[in-house]
Image (cartoon, rainbow, N blue to C red; front, side, top):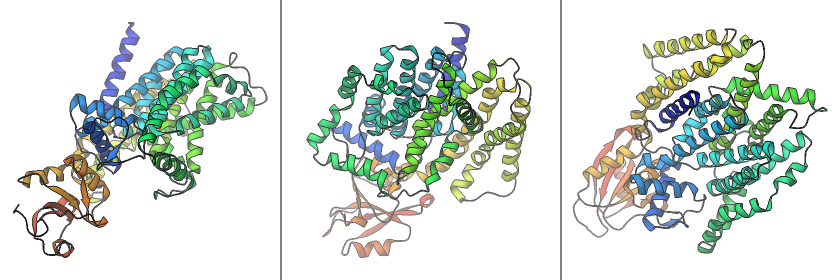
Length: 544
């Protein structure tokens, strides 16, 4: 191992450990998806069933099983916990970063560390690497597929085409047919752009197709055999239905993914856009003279990365149902494109600093996230900006970071320092969020503290019901208590004695919902404005 390889390995290990792994257990599962997916995996593990995902004992057929299988393995190894539920995404993100590094080291030597660290430090990658969800599994599998396709395109070695089809199969197991569909569109757009349509025909490789079917399809056949409603629920409702109709109430404007993509690329957004603009400009100038890939590998690769970045943004913009995670599989393309752009810039005989406009914009965008990171406790708990000293300190820190970045990049060889100087605010921002925000996020956004309080007051195992509370809290309680949660709003009122979580000061209303049954107040969870009660069994029952 050379000194450079050893240094690269230490840097990648350190950044991945801090950005992805550190503090995974400092706050509980948040949102509706994290606890829901974590509980589905828990139930599959308890039933020792690799085929049918269930939630509350009922089939949950919205998503394929790859994340569930990964989480089941994490549970078996480390025990069931919130951090174990997040571990699959963390490992997938690390695998993605390593794939970028080794691809660039083989095909774009000199840019591998830049590409890997830019990818690892992008806001979208950091955020979803710490979330119990399917998005990172899809992004990792899809990115490996795209890199493998280009490796085959450039080298002609069928081993890379094997990796391409295998990775698309894993992407299909991660989130469905969107992986092979987008791969076809991206490759087709690239081949049309460079006027080499025959590449599409060459990509259609029978052994690869058989491998894709062998890896990606058995689960689909098995789950359909056990659950005849699967095809309609998964394909018709959760794929075609989500795309063509806003059936799950995620309406956003057509341009929604433009700012989402730019935010997901923070702090590299400015230079990533510059790389895209330069590539498109060069293509436009040379569109009548596009050379063969053997003659201009770097330019062709930049075009391919542009197609990879642009196609998902355009495709999901057409969708009637939009969520931020959909776009995650495009983010590595931005990091790889930027690394290639920087490598080309550094190869020039005269390394001139970027324009002042780019420098200032990049410095601002890299430094500004430290402000909400330092104020995160106020934003979560009080839903407003604080007054006094905090509002002076946070902008001052951002200003110093911005000035330092701008002055460094303004030097003649400033581009050489772009990676190092930009990673400083990334590390500070993530550290501030974990140090200052973990406690408030746990108290305000997670069900973990409430579940612990409820468990402390009950003297024997009881069923749990909820009434008029957020679904995020309901799913969280289901995971942390590992039991079916009944919901009064749906007419699901247990006849046995049970615990009930409801909005604060709602005991009178609850008493009317369970006439003739004793309702005793047990406690108040102020952070999320809910109370919890003991409700006697119908027709009498034991004291709590």
